[in-house]
Length: 188
Image (cartoon, rainbow, N blue to C red; front, top):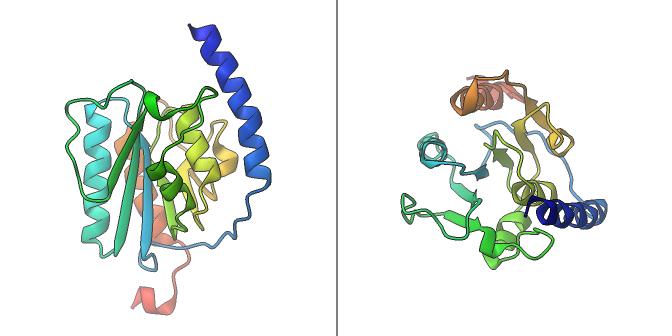
């Protein structure tokens, strides 16, 4: 089964490269004080990751971000039972992938086409369906974990060491998104 999945992913990678090559995106550095619309993308490998992503979205709203939308991927055929419906949260799973593992649903297309001021990828593990959404997103500024094969899709990369985990990544993403591109109004 793994062999078939590898073949599917190889074909998907070919199509992803073609799609990314035609993508027109203007990079615009933005901090959390300037952001109006933020997207949060994550690979929900388990309930703990799901809870961290949910808390991060809540924290962004509390920080005053007007629009926060989240998209999570579950590497299963069904959405797990611990997932509860949330405002501005969408999910996709293996059923939403075409044969070459490209995510394909209305909510995924809407998320990828949204011109977020910031797209935060909370994925620690690299999985192809999340990579596809990340790579094809029209977000103005993309942030996520550096050091992997997806690093070239980010405008700001956060390097984390083995064992530091998702909470460390979230803390550092927040730290740097609060630090960068400050204006005098942001400092006052």
